[in-house]
Amino acid sequence: MLRRLTGGRETETEPKPLEEQVIVITGASSGIGLTTARTAAERGARVVLAARSEDALREAVAEIESDGGDATYVVADVGDREDVREIARVAEETYGGVDTWINGAAVSIYGRLEEIPVERMREQFDTNVWGLLYGSLEALDVLEAGGTIINVGSIVSDRSITLQGSYSASKHSVKAFTDALRMELEDADRPVNVTLVKPAAIDTPYPQHAENYMDEAATIPAPVYAPDAVARAILHAAEHPQREVTVGGGGKGFTLLGTYAPELMDTLMKAVFGPQQRTDEPRRPDAESGLEEPAGNLEERGDYEGYVAESSLYTRLRQHGRTPGTATLGVGLVGLAYAGYRVLRGGDR
Image 1 (cartoon, rainbow, N blue to C red):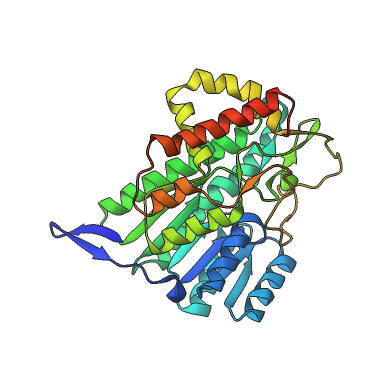
Image 2 (tube, rainbow, N blue to C red):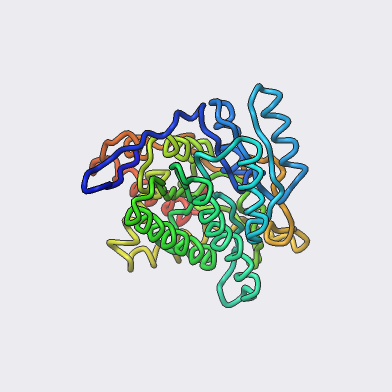
């Protein structure tokens, strides 16, 4: 529920049920964005899918419509503001407006900062930061009557991870921009809720679509969650606005350790999280990255070989107004410790 002070008193604006909403989703050709689009359409929302891969978007819309849903798409590079304006124009022209705008487009880079060309980092920021900023600003123009902006950050919005320093920096920027926008809208008494969603490691094609400067093929560190867990959290926020939500108790443990035991976390980065991001396979020198070309091809899941949690008890409790106790948070910390134990013992990565 949106709360704003008007004339010295608190007023409330009830978000529409999901089945009555028009939802824009960027980064909708794979991973979290695609899962969210499919789930929203299944629940009756009208969805506007945006990404760079037209073939994938066309197929996704056809699939949604064949299942009885209502969808359209816009081919857009969110790093180009005119493309983002086109997303807003199509949404208004097709459905008469927007209720929730989800900024989910992002690209990834693996490697040590000194080995990554600065130009490539800048291109990453064009998508991850400027693209999200453009989306948020365009959303404000179509949410005059109220609504929700949901920005997809990451647990690395709070604590950087080794070998993904540029990505971490971009997600720190996402959090800073999102927090500032929220405060300014509250100060201006605008009926627009702003939510930051911070997923932990998610089993999507993220590593396969990454630009990789390591010698080994890239993967993601445990604990790992399913993209459906993130989609549920995002869509819950569309109906029940909240400031921010972390998806995955392990992710919360990650940020808590980074905040309260930063030196210990630095050590874990070297001993655990660094090795966990490398596979035993060599990097393919001819592999295309999402930074270079549209990579989305309707894949929700990646090729992570370890255990994938289909849901998060921590996230469900938080989103339903319950504060997890020490035991629940402890599960996340134990998960991190176990992941480190497996690596140090030569177990599954």
